[in-house]
Length: 146
Image 1 (cartoon, one colour):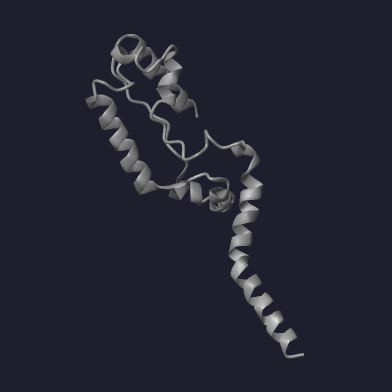
Image 2 (tube, rainbow, N blue to C red):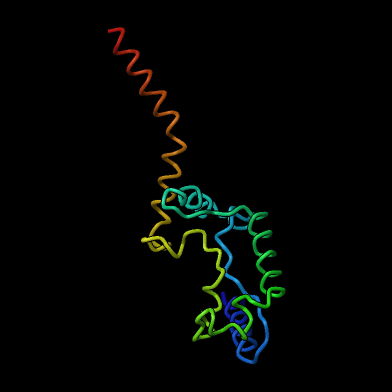
């Protein structure tokens, strides 16, 4: 977290001094290191129920590379200080709200911190669903023969 804050701090300083910058917010991504933590893997499994999109690593890499190229090559974009007024950037911290790929996090009515346990339970319920349906069908069939 500290490294990301330092990166944002440097981008804001450079933007204020007139440089074109590129520092974007990446989406929640199902990387190997994140999924190696079982709790995160379970929570990520249930997040789509709350309209959060968890990106695959390849997708995040491609999207973030495209944003980097866009930020640097597009002179009419929001990361160019010359366009500050056009994009209504009154504070340099607003750089990170433009072109962010948040996966639904910023438009959700729920706080991400409050969904971990519930998302994991939803994930497990989804795993159990085929077995519950089969058990229900077997019970219905047994009741039909009685």
